[in-house]
Length: 451
Image (cartoon, one colour):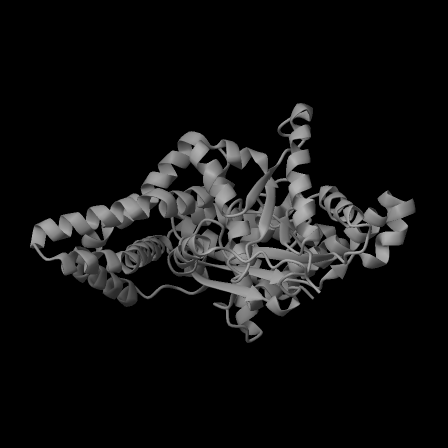
């Protein structure tokens, strides 16, 4: 039985509803929560442990899975130092700082005592805590080394209550179709809860052994849940193959390529085949990776996209898309207020405050929900109201902002892809175009023959 449910207050719930709406309906096109039935009941001491790849976006996905409780997150301390307002916002949604030896230095480690004492007490009292044992985010789809801090916290919490409380560790993973794409797809997937109770006696005499055994179980689950590309030397080639040929591979197996959970399973299968080929025939695998890099570079130089090489674009179709874009250009210009500013301002601020590209999504989301959406909503209402003299027109314009932003993004993306297709149609019959197409076909053929 749980001890405390930690039910959030009304202000927090309203704020969280607003955050979820922007996250689920505007920032992302589709979000998925897989295996939520594996989450222990509210009031059961639960430590959620996950891979970490996309800064604030990772904990947000978990946060919005818990609709009726307020989990606390232990996350890297440097994000709290970005700005005083960022510090207040992160703490308001349940994040607490963890200071790391390799980043903040040995002198800062003592600050963890306060965070851990608060967290251990709340865990014993039946709260849900979320931690990222990699102690920092990765910039690729792979699982880094785990710090044992999360198990130190969990076992010390149990020890605080004389090992009378059963604490669960719940492995989970985050997965994105594209880290940086607005209106993309995101999923959080939960594994099977691991009870620490069977390890209590071992911990009393051999704490390191107990932590190592639990860590092995947790890490194995997370690795199996996520896309874990361990061949970092060839990561860029593997990722290019996954994002291009991977769609063909999935479609041939009857998989809906627009359903991210199934695409994750397909991508894992494809990457496992590439890994198997490298073990059986390293030379053949390296030939594929080298060819993939050449195709990737060629596509970039042409300013086109890989999909155009796989299936020749229709000139008539591209022309019709441009005609439609011309007919909708006035609506597009209208939608740029405030869509352009909601995207460009956070991107500019990110370029000034952080060199880490994995923080970009954090800046876009956080700046919008905290500042830009409220400011531009008020400005939109006032401009429309004073321009028309009708208050309801102002409210209607504000209500349309989400749809206008989504339209502006999709319009920009569609026109961009159409221009890329036209570039390929113009250059595909040139010597370089024919050479690139030949390399692409050769790569596809080699990939199809992987057993």
